[in-house]
Image 1 (cartoon, one colour):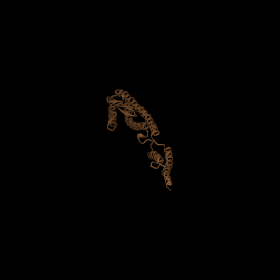
Image 2 (cartoon, one colour; image 1 turned 45 degrees about the horizontal axis):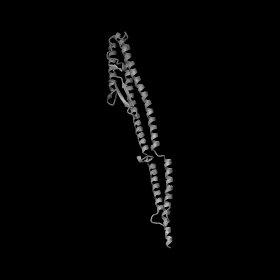
Image 3 (tube, one colour; image 1 turned 90 degrees about the vertical axis):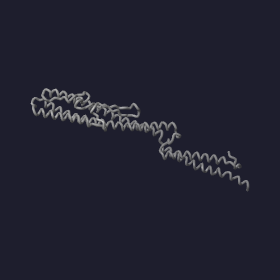
Image 4 (tube, helix red, strand yellow; image 1 turned 120 degrees about the vertical axis):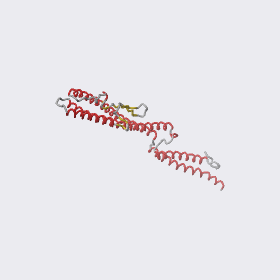
Length: 278
């Protein structure tokens, strides 16, 4: 307890001042949290929490980017499917023409016209293969694969293989349509089998693309949920609870006022010594 008759050092005033400084510091911290919306604004606020929050923040950002990668992959598969479907339409037309050529009633000029039309259709099939691209990469001109990164970790990859689909090699069975011969009904009947094989092979290629699309749709939903949940965990560690921070500020404001009052009284107390000189 301070002796009021000794005025060289006002211990009570120093204690009140120390308490006021501490309260001001704490109030500034909570006000800063309210202004930024974050409980952890620097590593010194919570060293472990800072490290965990930044790791979670990086993972959430990576998951969001992976979701964007999945969207891009889905777009590429959409392009591939549209190309395959265009080729399927061409093959179905070729099948009808080859069937017409296989009939004995078709001979002479009609057969030549059919062969010419089929030849043009095969050229169009090759054009579709050449023009089906992602950026400058031709998807169908040769068997190719693309590896997409679909997660936050290094091993989270998704490989898509596109079957070569040209007149010389359609789908995964590598059916050669360029050898079709429509010069006779007999050769046309053989061509029917060749076209059927090509249609079946291409259908399998389209099915494979569809299976990949279904998987990517599932991955996209999963990544969206994972990114959301990861950010929620980060928020619980790093973000400020506004109700609690405001409550702390109000409490500290009251303590500021009481500390100032106590400091004022402590500074005034030694003046009672003057009464000894009256």
